Image 1 (cartoon, rainbow, N blue to C red):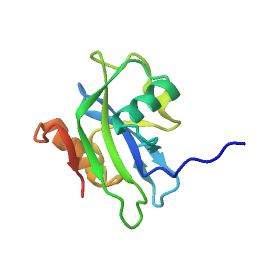
Image 2: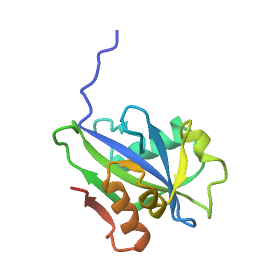
Image 3: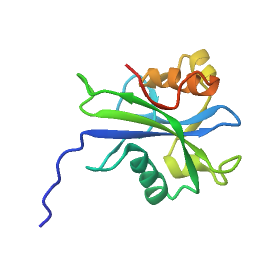
Image 4: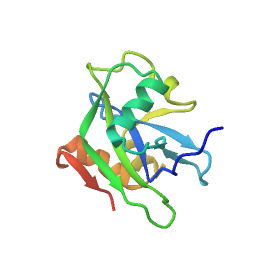
Length: 150
């Protein structure tokens, strides 16, 4: 008999990026209406860092090739509709580009987007502050470390 562990207190949301093209992968989120694009959410195990949880998920569960987690991360605290703290980590290939089609590995319907494209087309993204995090990263005005996304 397996005894369930404690409910996770935090989740990691890995953002797969293509630095050369300044774009990132988003998934259609059918649970949200109207149509919204998002990044996956994965629980962080007790005692595990959010960076390790992201690497574990992407490498062990999705079998992505060698990756590098950027030193910039975003944090959304638990509040109202968010039951857990959420950490956004930016994940890039170790080389110049991803050596395989990461869209297929990430999820059906995953698509590369640029923030300017999302804003120009009025595409809904969850959470909305993800676009600001990405612009800050691309433009270099975010410091290394965890940035509050409140």
